Image 1 (cartoon, rainbow, N blue to C red):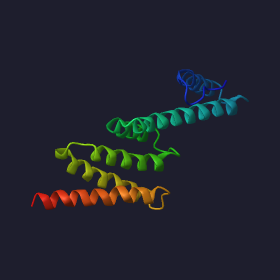
Image 2: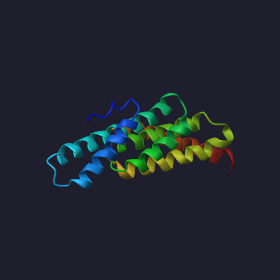
Image 3: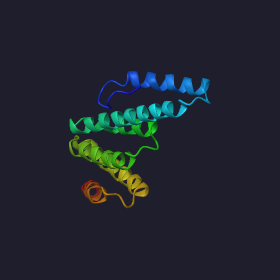
Image 4: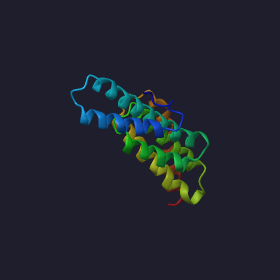
Length: 153
């Protein structure tokens, strides 16, 4: 039993996972448990990849709020994902781009959120390959927030 490619509908993969888990539960001593486990793992990986790629798509099509929501949903669904570092960075990027395209009345708050997302990112991934780019978003956001403070003093 093979699950569909990650970019296709995953319904059959989800059904295969359920069937394999039922099989493992009913026949734990079977010689096919290892194969059933492999199907479950493969299907899970494809679901994870599809979810991540869908979240990235929102960023690509400039739906920044949707991207942030999708990244949060991804983190809840796949907390041990191999994509977590990139997802955390992309969340910073999405928030930054949302802030830059926001109405002036919303920008200070949204740049402040970039700083929060960056802090969370750097706390979890201090040696990240995305660090240099994330720092650009962070430093620009700090400057923007300080500019709002200066203009409103």
